[in-house]
Image 1 (cartoon, helix red, strand yellow):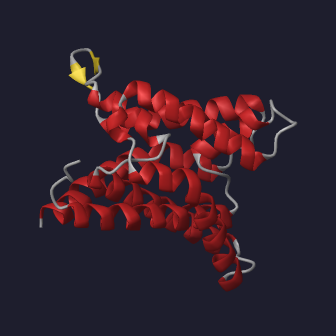
Image 2 (image 1 turned 30 degrees about the horizontal axis):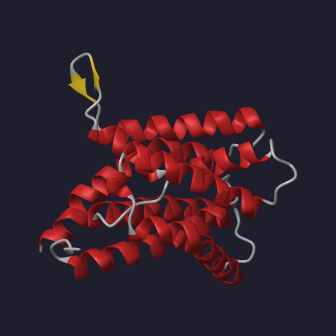
Length: 211
C-alpha cells in the first residue's frame, strides 16, 4: 500500500491531534459546565439501555457509527479513527485527573477558563487530525462526509462549519429529549466548535502541512 505524501508529518499531526482531543475533553469535564454534544447524545441514549455499563454502551455506539461511516465514506476511517475508538477514553481520564490535581476546586472564573481552554484545544485538535487525513473519529466523519457532498440551500453550498453546528445541535436535542443534562458548555461547544475548527484548519493545520 502506497503511503500518502508527507506521511511522517501527517502521522505526527494525527497523534498530536488525538492527544490534544483527549486533553480538551479533560478540561471540558473539569469545568463542570456540561459535556460536549456527542457525549450528551451518548449519555441520553444510554438511559434507554439501563442494563449496560456506560463504557460498554459507548464502545458499541462508536462501533455502530463506524458501520455508518463505512457506508458514508470509508476515506475517513484510518489510524485516528481507531486511536479515538480505543484510547481516547484513557487520555480523557488521565488529563482530567491531572487537571483535578492542579486545580482541585476551581471557582466560577476558573471553570470558565477551563471551559475556554477545552473548547479551543478541541478545535485545534480536530483541525490537526482532519488535515492530516489519516482518519477521524466516528462522529466527526458524519459532518465531513456531508460537507464533501456539497449540499446546497437556495443554490449556495453549505460550508462545513454550518453542517457541524447542525449535527452538534441534533445531538444535543436528542440527548436532552432522552434525559441527558445539557449545560452551558454543551451549547457553547455545539455552536462554536464548527467555526473554530474551520478557522484553525485554514490558518494553522493546512499551512503546517504545506511547510
